[in-house]
Length: 247
Image (cartoon, rainbow, N blue to C red):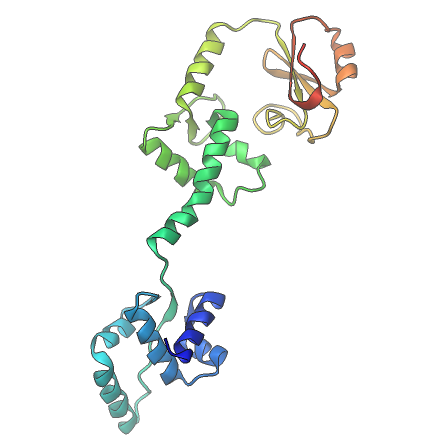
């Protein structure tokens, strides 16, 4: 590959979609040389344009382009240029790699929570957008790996759940024990106060816990203080996360 063509390819890798004039300035080449480099890159399947006019010109071959350019100059018309912007053509493998992030993160959230909703992404700084994650979740649903539906009442929007999570929710609903008290560390991903559950959002602070009474947040604070206020230290207190051993 000629050095001039390599320079154009490197420019597009660094700057993305660009006009011929921008490429010419960035590579210190004449626009005609940039056009020739673009034709070479298009023929190799490395570059594409965002319009059809330049591609139609390409179909005529180099000799026809030369004759048309000379005719345009002789007639005093503007020089024939490769109109529109030019950019690298992503391969199928690169497209798949671009989708790997949302798909991987969707699976991670499903393993962590069992049920995924838009509200859950509020505490996830690595989620670029709910839209990207939603596409991955819909793909998993189409494959039969997850189920779509309404699993959590009071929330608006699409929800997705692992099949085993749906069965667990049904089982918990059938065998619910009134008066159950569960302790969750504030740093635990299960701390969804202020996200899915009522109340102000609780920072993920070490040694802080949230006490849930029948699934509703009842107390927050250090473990000892919470137990003291609730007056509960018996075996019915269940504890999860990093706050200490289970009781």
